Amino acid sequence: MIRTARNHLSDLKKQLFGQSTARALFSIIVFVLIWELGSKSKDWFGFVTPWLGHVPAPTDVIKVWIGLLTDSSYWQSWVMSFLRVLAGFVTAMVLGIPFGLAIAVSRISYGIIFPSFEVLRPIPPLAWVPAAIIFWPTQELSIIFVTFLGAFYTIVINVLGGARAIDLRYFQVAESMGASKWDVFRRIILPGTLPSIMVGAAVGMGLTWEVVVAAEMISGGGGAVGSSGGGLGFFIWNSYVGGSYEQIIVGMISIGIAGFISSAGLRKLGELCTPWLRKR
Amino acid sequence: MNAAPGQLPRGAIRIEDAVKVYDPDGAAILAVDHCTLNIPAGEICMIVGPSGCGKTTLLNAIAGFHSLSSGAIYLDDQLLCGPGKPQADPGPERIVVFQNGALFPWKTNLENVAFGPIMQGSLSRVEAHDKARAMMADAGLEGVEHNYPGEISSGMRRRVEIVRALMNDPKVLLLDEPYRALDSLTKSVMHEALLEIYYKTKVTIFFITHDLEEAIFLGHRVVIMTSRPCKPKKLLEVDIPHPRNYSVLTTKRFRELMDETLEAVHEEALKAFSLGEKEG
Ligand SMILES: Nc1ncnc2c1ncn2[C@@H]1O[C@H](COP(=O)(O)OP(=O)(O)OP(=O)(O)O)[C@@H](O)[C@H]1O
Ligand SMILES: [Mg+2]
Image 1: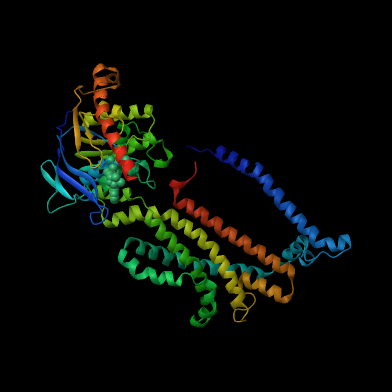
Image 2: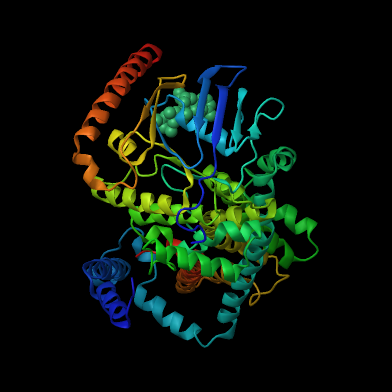
């Protein structure tokens, strides 16, 4: 149970040099090689490959990417997308968790609120884009609103399901031992729901990235936000319009990395919040 | 432990004509039928009976987790539930230890044990933790205070749970097959540990089990229940003097009592089985 630094180190070694790492590296290297060969092949083999020829080669993408690293508008796109995801996601958590808990613990609020919620839920967040642009005073708020919607439903559903799945016996024990209603909420319902909250948050985070990119593409093109304030979604769209195929790929990979970073951060946070679920 | 050795027995349970019908307006499942049972203070009363006969139903009524359809239950001549008050209030003087254990997974073992007194406000957090530490040490649970229940063996979890129950200074312990999932070696350790606790506290124990050896080894009395609906079929006085240890298992008297119980139980099990076949 006591884990020494040496233990951690050997774990790390295993992770880095283990068989699965070797396989993963192999898989990625082969993938990039095929991509490179495919996109360069029309020059190399003297005949035109059907469609792979239009895809920029990885080496070209990297060249363009290195050029962009010193370009502040590229980084500005990162910052903008991250801020929007954060704003939408945090709002979804701050509103979604109490909302989900409220309808989980009270049959009355469930009966009154949940039906409307269920009517709105099937509408995909992106279907809200035009309405959001009209209803909200600024473009920025519309994008954040749509991003918020992306995570909100998932978080509420997870909180609701998690709170309802708490073992009845925990409530019986708490009641026998004299816990008040507030104690039951704070010491049973809240921690009992936490794992589901974290699952909802992880799924919600993935959805916010999907939604924010699309929303930026749709609304950022209007010109009001401008090319550097458009975020990574608009960065891709702008590259497409400008005909820079390498930049499109740079934008796509950037979003992948951004999504990965946010998920990893969230996972770490989840582990910190639920120490009893830590793997031993 | 605050209960001095030789403390006066306490916590007499009197069950009078208890009837429990599940779903009275629909399927009307009669689970307990005019069950009358007197458990004197400080007795270890073992309840055995066929699967699904209604033992847990009876226990839940004593604990106050659900109502009785008719009849009454008294604790030390005070009405727990009866005419005009179908459901008892759950309280710290009657603590249940569940079949699969119900330690809060999100609390450390120490926090679990200290839970009751903190909820009741009888001890401050610090005092409760001190007492919990002392009682855990007493029960041979040193060193796992800051682990989560998920991190210790199932035998240890059961011990932690019983210590958690005792922290409430209960008059009655309601045990619902607490050792069912344990291997026989761990079980025997648990039995001696429970007896040790019993000799110190003289708490009344209502103990449901399927294990006849367990029933006779621990109990002052073994109550054999009929197949559903449940009521006492046979009361068996175990005339082996306490304190007991595992050597009584090999005595002639123990074997005789085993045979006597087995016969009665087998008869009911057969009835329950053919009943189940008819229903199924
Ligand atoms: N909430 C409920 N609603 C309807 N029927 C129930 C309910 N709980 C239990 N029963 C039924 O009542 C009967 C008695 O159940 P109970 O759990 O008390 O049996 P038991 O003696 O504890 O069984 P086991 O030994 O398997 O634990 C069973 O037939 C069961 O199906
Ligand atoms: Mg049962």
